[in-house]
Image (spheres, rainbow, N blue to C red):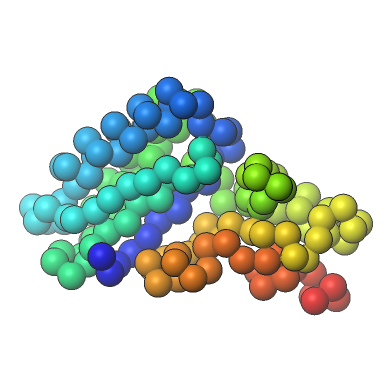
Length: 153
């Protein structure tokens, strides 16, 4: 599948039950997702109990403004239904052992400067827009991200 990717980071870790229910909700949304009446071919996956990844195969029909708006509305519905935040772009995620840690970006930058977080820490880049980037750059060292303080790189 070649196409766009949307990455939604949750402020809270998904429980097993929540993860299963979100997957059901995503499947239902994707079965109805269309652009100007043309069904879109998409998929959704939940990673690390923190990320909802929605992908669309644009070899058939591409997502349009209206279909992207429908997707954002769906994500807002998930936020309300599960009392989570998925659209807060001030939150970032990184690995600490096997755990995914979510913090405000300004706190991560402060931790880097203080030396309590390191440039080789793996960061999850939720700004990725396509599948090629997702496959190669979703998990990168902080040193290769926008979070890296210029004076530490």
